[in-house]
Image (cartoon, rainbow, N blue to C red; front, top):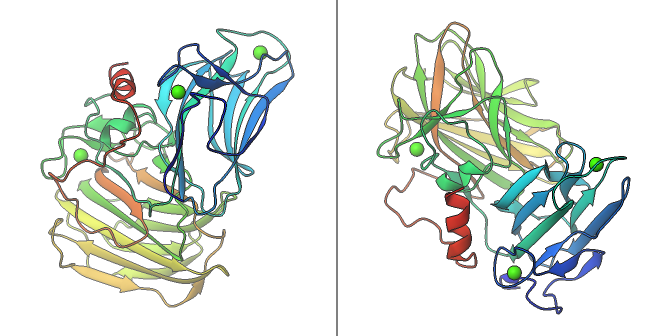
Length: 370
Ligand SMILES: [Ca+2]
Ligand SMILES: [Ca+2]
Ligand SMILES: [Ca+2]
C-alpha cells in the first residue's frame, strides 16, 4: 500500500468501514465534509469500524468532540484497546500517529450515558490517514510555553503529540538540551508523572528509545525513567535511575535486574540515555542500554547488555517517559525523547521537521492558535 488518505469529501471511501457514522458539512477540518457520529438517544452508541489496510503501520486522524463532559464519551479503539478517550468540548485536534501493527480494526465510538446532553452531542473525525512507513515517534517539548502544563493537545508543537499525560508535567526553560529551548519536568514533589505514547508497536522484534536527562541535585532518590508496557497494560520493562547514579533496567516494573550501567550519571549536566530492546513473539530477548555523558556524542560513556530473558506483558505497545521529583527536591528535566525501530542516536537539531504533507495548513494554524 501507499499512504491512504480519507478526507470524507465524497461517498466513495478509501477505506473499508461499517457502522452508522455519516458525512456532514458542519465545520469540517478540511475541505467541505467530515465524518460524524449518528444522532442517538441516551444509553445508545454510534460507531464506525475501519478495517486496517494490509501493510499499514500507523494511523493518524483529526477529531472534534462536542458532548456532555465526562458522561458522553468519544473513544478510539485499536481492536479492543482504548487509544484515546475524550468528552466535553474538544476543538479539532491531531491524534498523533498510532501504530496499527497487529491491529485489524480501528473503531471510533460515541456513547451516551442515561441522561443529559451538551453541545452538538456528537464526535467528528477528518483526514484519516494510514501510512506504511517505518514509524519513529519524537518530541522536543519545544513550542510549549514555560510554566504551562503539558497536554496531549499542546505537545504536538514539539513533535509527535503524547496520547496521555499522567500526573502534572510542565514545560520548563530553566534547563533544556542544547538549543532546544524547552524541556519537560515534574513541578510537584512526590507525584508519579509521565508522558506516554499509546501504541508504538514495531513490525519487527526491535524497539528503541532515547531520552536526554538532566538531574538537579543533590541526588538522593531512586526513580523510574522509562517504561514499556504490553497491549494489556502489563509492564514489560522499566529503566530506573538509582541514588548511586547507576541506570538499572528491569524486566517488569522491577521483577529482575537484567542490565546495569556501571558508571554513575553526572548530576547537573545533560546526558543521553539509549535503550534497544529485542523481544521475539514468545517474549524472550535482550536489552542493551547506553549512556552518553557527552550527550550528543556518537561514543558512549558506558553500556550494558542483558542475557536473554523472558519479558512479561507481551510485545511492547506503549512507551512512558517518567518525570521524577523527589520530596527532597531532587528532580530531573527531560528532553529530546524518541521511540523507533532502530537505535535513535543524537537529536539532529536544525534538521527539517517531519512534514505532515497531507494535513492542511489551515488546520495546523487553527490547532496552533487555540
Ligand atoms: Ca474533509
Ligand atoms: Ca449524557
Ligand atoms: Ca527541548
